[in-house]
Length: 304
Image (cartoon, rainbow, N blue to C red):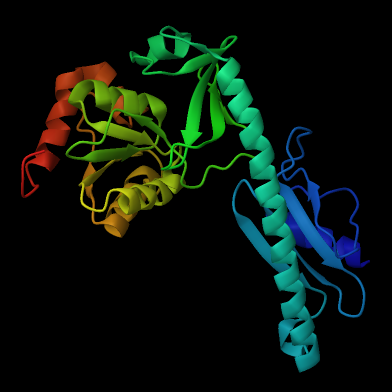
């Protein structure tokens, strides 16, 4: 009964719930998507005294609490019990998450060391970009994901057809792939192809955040490391997507670090799928990319 209600709560949050629930107060992992290779889901459930627990997904960052009783009906003693159980569930979650990070970090380092430096790959050719130190694992392109100390935490893999995946259990938050050495200004963008295009066109150092949601964490990590250098967010202009998440996230990240935003300016006849600086690079060339950044750099109080 309690397990069924807990499963309903997990499903209501948009996750694929496990077939059975263990209400033993310990953290259990499950596939939040239903795929066998996925183990990003987690839960902790107590079924003694006050049935309550927590669940979430490491990949999306979702965390929710659940209680068998409405909060308004809880006694003070039950509130105290709930608070302690939430604290313990968070502790277990964090310990397990760090363990997952460490395991993936070791595997990522081994894969990166065994991979072969490559200058040619179908994805690089399709995007019109240089490798800038990327490696290949068979037919798979590997993109390193590091923190500001240079420590490798995980890898993004890209197939010849452009399918991208992160290593299961790997840290993403605040990790990035860098191209070039910071001098004058640092650019932060979403995708690797965009980063390589911007660097090739402008010579500026660029950090790939891998997603719109990671632009802020990466920009803030770089601001802590480089407190004075200007930071420019190279936005994806998701003009065909409601809310334009690329622009919205870039502006939010820039605001958080006192940075600037550069937006790709496309020529007439812009294809619907053209959204980022790599698309502009392919459509109009390096000069068009340079012009977008020149406009932003002109606003700085000193030469970059």
